[in-house]
Length: 115
Length: 113
Image 1 (cartoon, one colour):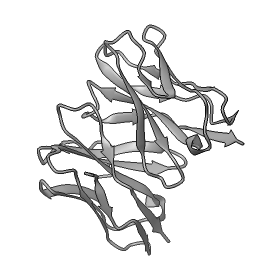
Image 2 (image 1 turned 90 degrees about the horizontal axis):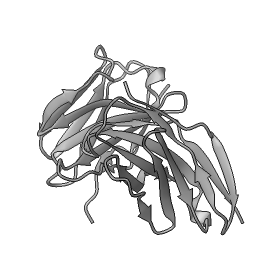
Image 3 (image 1 turned 90 degrees about the vertical axis):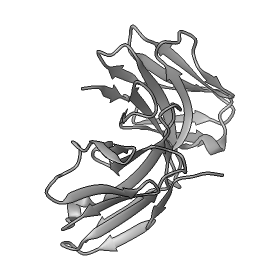
Image 4 (image 1 turned 120 degrees about the vertical axis):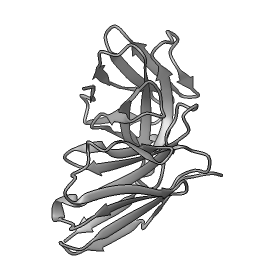
């Protein structure tokens, strides 16, 4: 079974600085998707970014980018120019063959943004 | 702005009572998921449906939990009888097969006393 590990239960960053959240996963599949979800105190799960395993190019969405290392089974999230609104729980998730299949989540990283 | 809706948003009940949570997926989405979030276990899949047929319910305690899709616009998750260990946030999510993204509802926070 696939597993997702987030080794940093908590992280903090100064406003306007850059922070990187780590995620590793274990799978024997070759075709899959990886996701980062944000969960603010409102508890709504919000998709931040996704990466298709077959794509070598790292995904980018505005201030959010990933470093996808397929051989190392590593999928880190970099947040640039951190804003107060970025404070939330961040979950890394593994999707079998795509986002319309079941997701396996890591335990999450709580990000605090200091003004 | 299409979104997944869930009712109720919060539910407090006594141990032994029946609890029903409802989810309306986004119109046109053919896949519906139920996830449970607790502090100890994190987010875990309970069950999911495609075109209203159950695909995987291995994460669901079979003796007290049941999930159904009476029609394409409604998914239900029922707990009978409820126990304090069922206290959690229950998320519904929906997806369309061609699109690689799940959309989550706001969740139902269940507290069983």
